[in-house]
Amino acid sequence: MSDDRKLPEWAPSEGGAGFTSEVMKGVEGGHDGMPGSHRAPARARRRRKLTVDDYVKGILDNDRTILARAITLIESNSPAHHEMAQAVLKQVQPHAGGGIRVGITGVPGAGKSTFIEALGVELCRSGKKVAVLAVDPSSSRTGGSILGDKTRMETLTREPNAFIRPSPSAGALGGVGRKSRETMLLCEAAGFDTILVETVGVGQNEVTVRSMVDFFLLVLISGAGDDLQGIKKGVMEIADAILVNKADGDNVHRANLARVELERVVHYLQQATPGWTTPALTASSVEGDGVMKVWDTIIDFHKNTTGSGEFDKRRRRQNVDWVHSMIQEGLKDLFYHHPAIYSKLPNIEKEVADGQLPATTAVEKLLEEFKKLTLTH
Ligand SMILES: Nc1nc2c(ncn2[C@@H]2O[C@H](COP(=O)(O)OP(=O)(O)O)[C@@H](O)[C@H]2O)c(=O)[nH]1
Ligand SMILES: [Mg+2]
Image 1 (cartoon, rainbow, N blue to C red):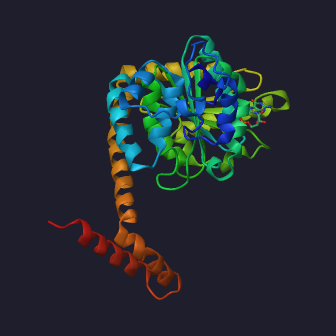
Image 2 (image 1 turned 30 degrees about the vertical axis):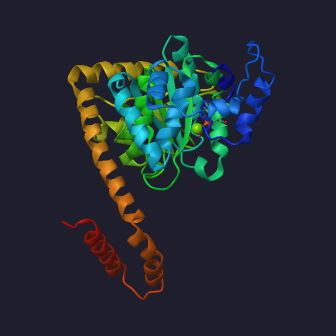
Image 3 (image 1 turned 45 degrees about the horizontal axis):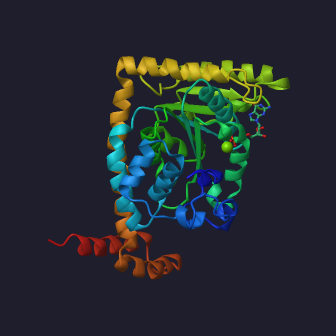
């Protein structure tokens, strides 16, 4: 398996030539020392089909290559993979749940990745096992920002206690981190005790991430004084802490002003977590100041909410919410993939676009059709 280590952990198991060529070179010499043995090329071995048991054992043994492949399996849209993924999940689930799940959101460029790297390295060096899931909506389009994040987390990547998994949110059904919950469970089962989920704060993302993490951190930067006007009240109301990042150089004073102002504003808002007052903090992720203060806050939060029962309550509620979101996703899938609907949709769309059919009538027609097809007794 050591050959596989050369691959990025998130390389797709059916990866392109770019991922495999390096590995091919390393093993072609047949240097395993076994006379007469004929080793299969790394590419073939890497693609060896794993059984459910292989996946489960690999995950529980903290084999990162297998963990990465299991995540790829979970993220796959193929029905065959789906069944296997569920079987794997079912078996590892009893070993999951032990991590603290932290969501980190903010506008692009706020310094989320830099912060995660600074925090992650500290945590790894203090013996924690840190999994980073970077859910990046832009990555599915450009592919660029994933690499950008990866580059910025270079030091963290080298930490033996870290596992970094960028996942494109793949725009389509479900949007952000459709499989992030499952991925978190796998990481926990593999022994990761700290799960950091990075996501870009746009639209629904914050709410979705909030619904799957224990602690939600909003990362901001202070600008030219009118900072706070652009921040939606709704986002502040779901944050368990607000971090004004880039508090360094000329920016320290402004960042402190912003922090004070934020603390004042938060005071008037609804609490994100009952019994917990959302603090505003400053940090410089580049210089490191204030980064561990955020971690101390997370630890305080954890103590506070496990003591009050809020922690458990939230996890229980999240599991139920998850059921409903999967039902919604499943229903949507059933509808859109039904051959009768699928085949009619383009024409109906055209009629609506051309103004020949009211949108309401179109929907009624389609749903009636769908009901007839599915609700036969
Ligand atoms: N001065 C300063 N720059 C920072 C800090 N954190 C991040 N940056 C810079 O801000 C840019 C965006 O950072 P990145 O972590 O990729 O932001 P993300 O899009 O929120 O993940 C990069 O050029 C970072 O070097 C900080 O604390 N201070
Ligand atoms: Mg980033």
